[in-house]
Image (tube, rainbow, N blue to C red; front, side, top):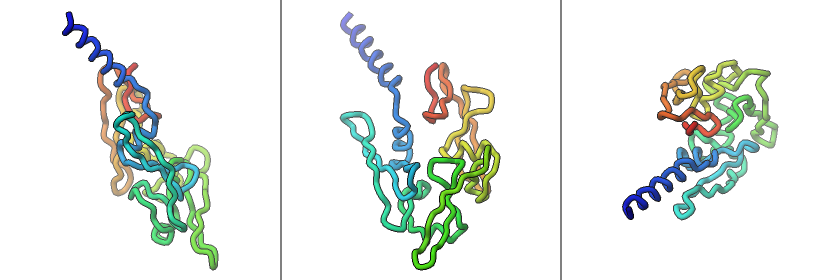
Length: 185
């Protein structure tokens, strides 16, 4: 009987932990240790794991002057090393926006926030606004399946464009794009 109560307690704790509602930061932090700050390309979040609390502490950080956050490289990069290459930088969290690099005499580089036309998304690989669902979703690493809620695609940047791999959720779960994971039904 004592063994049965310990087993029941263990299973209850396991279910409680598995059903915990994680913050979207938990997904960013567990994968990259950093998260972009969607309101300003010169800022980012740094994540510190707190084992006692079993969660991440998230700290807003600022890039040095004339630098922007690169989630791809997970570091601040000087505008003059990023901007002249092609003149555009993808918005870190909004797939329908991008920054155009512009120089102002005597002041250096400035980022101008631009918005793609309705129902189009910024394609980092093609440096233009396009109407593909892949570019819309894959910038976060995952894309929902078109018809099956129990499947999703894992995305990887290829040359050119995205490489998608079909993935399957465990039994009794469905893909939740906003949490970037499979959750219980």
